[in-house]
Image (cartoon, rainbow, N blue to C red; front, side, top):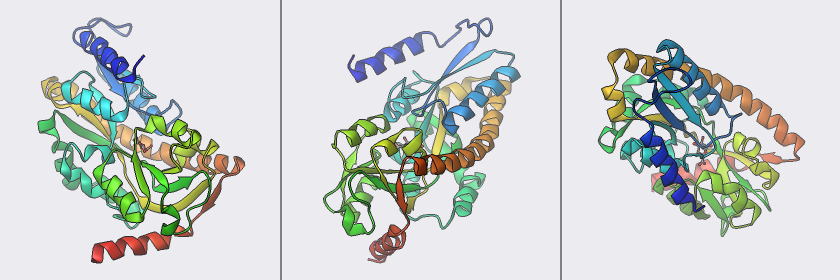
Length: 312
Ligand code: GCU
């Protein structure tokens, strides 16, 4: 079935059963569908299953959270759009993608924005900064609830390692569907190839692209490391994911239910950040076993190149 038609069908089914639906977990439970694009071992999925548990327990199953992993309700762009309209209730969107819904998210897509993981986490945990940013998409129909760690983004390639910016010349590198990410790759000399995350494995395998850029879990959880054997630790981006929710739905909940959702979102942020640490260590070990070559050689070259652009 054509992917778009599948998404529309799934969304229609979802919206039909949203209100006043009875579920196995209780009578007249309010079903809330949560969409994301990762597999069931990924820290985001584990955190969302925890969200399901907390919300259902605290509401005595008056809310029935249903988590759909693996792009089952569409790629990330589609699921964010469906959350705008309310066909999906809650979704996970990378900040890269969210910049097209509000410009305030763009700043996070700038390369080498943060000096360290600690710097990055302190900004993300700062409610004075993030509170307004989460609200910035309200007019577009959704708001942010919390953030999920997605580590640092690095280049990985199938044929040759990227050791210096010149190695990207003429290479087709997949980036997220974000103007800032596209521009970044162009400035580096690579040929930016935007596509949805779920398409990257096949694109690498079929040599439609020469590489991509992402965190370590893309190599193991999403198996990109089966095809791309060179990982260059250049750390150009620390770009988290945001848990978003349809704004009307959140506003129309009773105060009690709204607080349960907001508290649960806070709680799973800590859960996910811890799970992320563990999974990245596992991924590093696993990728060594797969014979993946990693290098940090490019990091300083790239930083210098970006600072040079900024100065200009
Ligand atoms: C990371 C991020 C996802 C995003 C993906 C991508 O895995 O956590 O939200 O979709 O990168 O590159 O598309």
